[in-house]
Length: 145
Image (cartoon, rainbow, N blue to C red; front, top):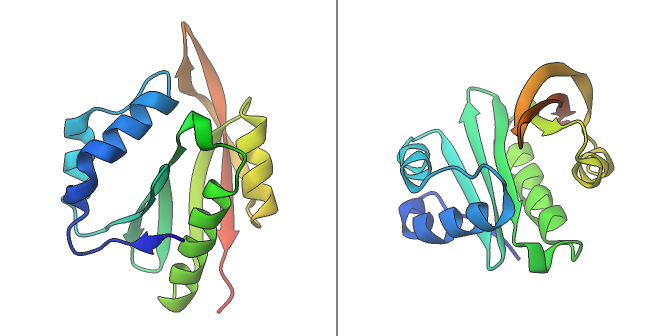
């Protein structure tokens, strides 16, 4: 269902930006995405209604953002993207995958835990939501090769 796009992820710049803008209160800009997609350490998986953006350094990866269009949520899109990323990580000798998720984003926390991620700490006041800040739950997935 998804595919790893290493050759020219910039082809998806507008689609990725639009999806993020439709999904987050404080979306990243087109320039933010362009800068990330130009880095050789960036990995982008994309499907019609979503994408997964990661940074790969040595034997670790960090999920920078996982985004699914609101109309396509709870249909397995995010699980599919995460499964594809996990297969890539296993094939490439990645030992761990990290991410942060807002402490009040219970659907996302449930998804990540279902996919095997475990808690690795809290980052206080990490995300801005309206006029307040909320903590981030740090999660890690240990990949067994």
